[in-house]
Image (cartoon, rainbow, N blue to C red; front, top):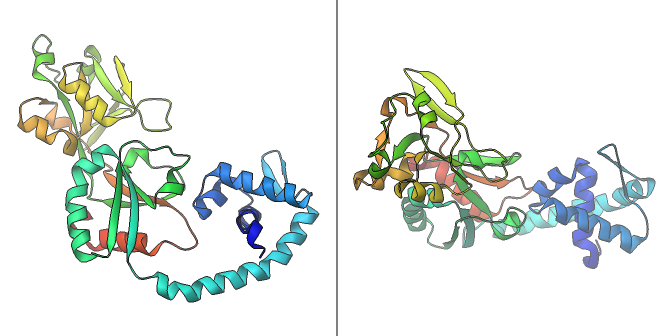
Amino acid sequence: MPKRLAAELTAFAAVAEYLNYSRSAIYLGVSRQSVSKLVRTLEQELGVRLLQCRSGKIKLTDCGEQLLAKLNPDIQEFSRAIDVVGVYLDRPEGTLRLAVDHIAAHALLVPLALHFSRKYPAISLDLSVGAVEKDSLWRSYDARICFGTDIDRDMIAIPVGGKVRLITVAAPKYLAHRPTPLTPHDLRKHHCLHYRAEGSKTPNVWKFERSGRPTAIKIDGPLIANDLNLVLLACVDGVGVAHLPEPLVDEFLAAGLLVPLLPDWAPMDRGFFLCYPRRERMPPNLRTLTSFIENFPAFK
C-alpha cells in the first residue's frame, strides 16, 4: 500500500465495504467529513471517479471496483501485520483520553479514577471535562462519559454506575412567593428551566413516575440550555424549577440551597454511559477500561 496515500486508500476501502460514509467514519474513528475529504483527495490524485452517489446510495464505479480488488491483498496483509504487533500493543500502558460531561465528572470521576489508577498504574487518565466539539471528538479522545440522553446513534455504550433518579427541585427564594406544586401538571404554572441534549433541537420532555405509572409532561419555560450545570446554577439562583439527575443536586439539597419537589413522582433514568465508536481494533487501554467498568461492582 503506497505510504503517501495510505490514509486515503484506507478511507476508500472502508466506504467501499459499508457503502455509507457515516458508518465508515465510525469504523475508522474519524468524522464523516474526514472520510469524504480523503476519498475526494484520492480521486483527485488518481484522476478518476471511484464512487458514485445517486438518490443517497453509494456505488462503486468500474475503476473503484478494480482498485478495491487490487487493494484487498494489501489490506489483508496489513491486517495480519497488525495482529502480530498486537501482542505488544495489548499491554495496558500509556495515556487514555476521555471527554467527560460536567455531571459525569461530578458523580463518577473521583471513585472511577481512584480505583482504576490503583489497579492500572501504567495507564494515565487524561480527562477533559465540559462540552466538546462533536466533529473533532473522536480525533482527540478515545471515549466519552456522558448522561444517557446524550449518546449518539451507532455508538457502543456501556452503562457506568447504574440508573439515576431524576429529581424536581427549586430554590427556597423561588418558592417564597409561589405555591408548591403537588402534581407534575402543576408545573405548567411555574417557570421551568429546560435541558436540551447536544444535537437536539428541542428540550427534553420531563418524565415522572408514581406507583409504577409513568407520566411525561411537556412544559414551557424561560430558559433552555444544553449544559446541565448551567440549568442547575440558574435553579439555585431562583430563576425557576429544574428537573435534574440526583447526583448533580445532592450537595445543594444538603446545604438547603435547593428544595425537592414532587418526591413521590421521581423516576429512575438511564444514568451514565461510557461510549465510543465501533473500530476494527479497540485501543488496548480503552479495552482495559471497559473490562474494568463491566467487572467492578461500583460501576455496574
